[in-house]
Image (tube, rainbow, N blue to C red; front, side, top):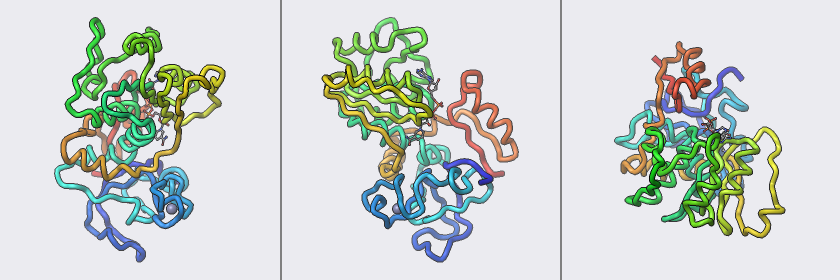
Length: 293
Ligand SMILES: NC(=O)c1ccc[n+]([C@@H]2O[C@H](COP(=O)([O-])OP(=O)(O)OC[C@H]3O[C@@H](n4cnc5c(N)ncnc54)[C@H](O)[C@@H]3O)[C@@H](O)[C@H]2O)c1
Ligand SMILES: [Zn+2]
């Protein structure tokens, strides 16, 4: 595999003989998940589990999207037409991060209007989960906690309250805000044992814990504490089935995913782009866009 990447917006230059609904010249969003469209899982909308040669393959099992040309298998079911009025940068955020935050976090976590949602991890995925939760609560009044000022960028992306858990006790803050109960939904968006364990503590009895993080090592499931709390824990690879919904929300200005883009480079500035993206604490990078010149 030569090129990484599984997020792209581009113009169709060639189509294979099996492609019916995508034509040369079309502008399309390339989903991070490829779908054969015909297997058992695809028929159920579980494209991430595709048995017919799809799933998470771009930049993983086959050449990815950080290239001048990209071969997208099963183009009919693995791309989306670009809706009017949505910018390329907004669209690009719909390839992976918005669907992941919304589907694996918000929808799997069963976020309901009025819910208190605690998101652990404020990278692009956690912020997408915040934006997705907010989209389900249009017009909701922002919570306010005297003496607690969210940082500007996090607030703009929809969080009411920001807790730096290296300095503060997140569990105490959430319990304090919820009459001792905990959050209705806790979303894990980091992928390390400590944050998974924290997310399970943050959810109230009867609440939901939605793990999004990709974990590289075992995390402890404290059943000795959790069994009596009637919680539901979900986890999974994104299927991207809500992408059409998110595209409509973007078109209706109910989500503005373009806000995630902090840096822009051309394809010949790869090294610089990777350097900026790999040091978010210094550079403030959230999402870095690479454009073909
Ligand atoms: N399930 C899926 O389909 C899917 C899809 C895409 C990404 N992911 C995963 O989602 C996770 C988040 O992705 P991302 O791109 O936002 O990652 P990221 O690394 O950019 O962001 C993670 C954030 O968590 C913060 N963090 C680190 N340790 C923390 C701690 N102990 N407490 C609180 N915050 C902490 C970091 O400072 C950073 O802001 C990753 O594990 C990624 O692999 C899952
Ligand atoms: Zn399939």
